[in-house]
Image (cartoon, rainbow, N blue to C red; front, side, top):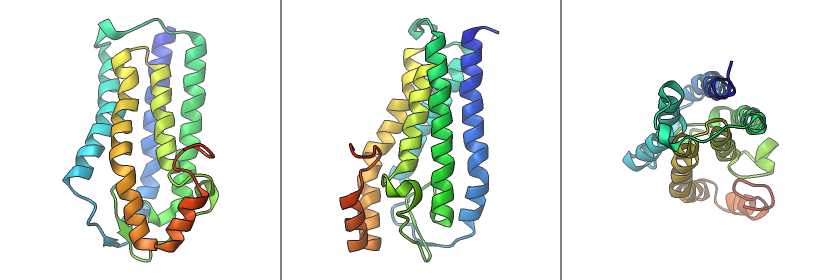
Length: 196
C-alpha cells in the first residue's frame, strides 16, 4: 500500500468514526424538547453546508479521484503520522464533548428544555471544545491529504462556520444564562486553553 493511499484511508476512517461516534448522542439529544430555536435559520444551515463542503465533500472527491491533481504535493511519512495523531486527538475530544454535554447538545443553535450550562469536564478548559475538535479534524485533514485544495478545505470551510457563528452562539448563551455565562466567559477561552 502506498503512503498516499494509507493517508487517504486514515482520513476516511477518521471521518466515518466521527459520524458513527455522533449517532448515539444525536439520538439521545433528539428526545429532549427544544425550548428556543430562533437561531436555527437559513444562515446557520448555510454555514453548516459550507463546513460540510470543506470537511467532507471536497476532500472525499480528492480521496476518490485525485482531483484537483495540479494542487497536489509530495507526502511525507512524518506528515501522515502527525495527521493520524491529530485525528485521534480530535476524535477523543469530540467524544468527550458529547459525553459532557449529554442531551444539551445539538447540531444547530438552539436551547433545549431545562438546558443546563455545562462548565465541567472539557468545558472547564474552553467554552467551545467541540469547535476545538473540528479544528483538529481540519488540521488532520491538511496533514493527511497532500493537496492544497482538499487539504485546506476543512480549515476554510469550518473556519467560515466558526467565525460567523461563535459570536451568535455566545450571545444566545448569554441571553439564556445571563450572569452565569458572563462569569464562565471570564474564566475560560473560546477554543484554545489560555490563548483564545
